[in-house]
Amino acid sequence: MDKWILKIVAATAVLVLYWWTLVARPVAIENVATGPGSLTVEQSRELLDESRTLLRARDFAAARDITRRLHDAYPQNHIYLDQLATIARELGDPATEAAWLEKYVLVSPTPIEACPRFGQAYQEAGRPKESLAAFERCLSFDPKDPDSLFWMAKAYEGAGRVDDAEKLYARGLEVSPGYLDLKIGSGRMHLRQGKLAQAKRDADDVLAVAPDNVDALLLGGIVQRSAGNYAEAKRLLERGVARSPGYADFYVVLGGIAEAEGRVADALRYYDKALELRPESHDVAARRARLARS
Figure 1 (spheres, rainbow, N blue to C red):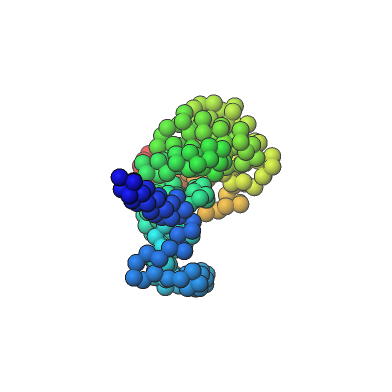
Figure 2 (cartoon, rainbow, N blue to C red):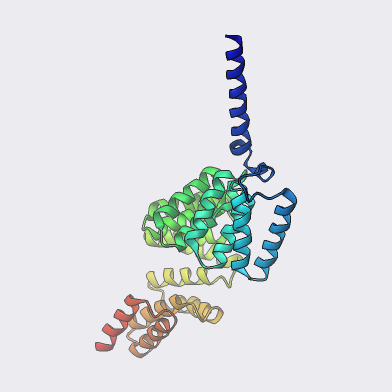
């Protein structure tokens, strides 16, 4: 009986050691050989250096092949997973980037380092549900991370969840009151909620410290247009055009003001410029066609 107990204890100890090596200590996985193509620690370091050199030289395919070899040898090493995600991003493949980051956050000792690009990759891949889930996981890693709060709020905004977005922008500003993009996002939500005074204050707060911020100039111009202050709206929007002439939204809003003021030729000119910069804007094309027929 004692011999059987000793055997059970020994087997349990082996299983615990196996679990500790492969699961509980993923950072040290490069010291564990996994399969016929396994690499020594020194070989792994040399190959990682080579991969990084190739990445800097923009030889993405070669960098990917080397890093895949590293990953195949040590599949739970978070450094290799991060490198593969970076290479996928450089190759313009956000779906693959997201897939690598999914694995990264499971094994990395600091999963927050994958944020916010974890959720951004899903956004760029056209997968909004997965994007929201990724940002939620980012906030579970660090509920006060301002970047995760900003990007999740922006995802809510894109999904039309205005109240949820406004709350997250507000949470982000509590953590990081100087985060200008959070302030601008908050202003957009206040505008959509019809809170013009608060939206104006948000735009003014940003312009007070960053007078050339084009998003704040756009927000301020839209707020003034919504309030019927066309002269002030045009002043802000024209400042924005001077600083960022390739920003189509400025021309759309200026076109709307010109149309409201009965300046049809100016409105058509602004809409044409907007469509030149963003030809896929079907609503602007429809507005221009309607105005041209009138």
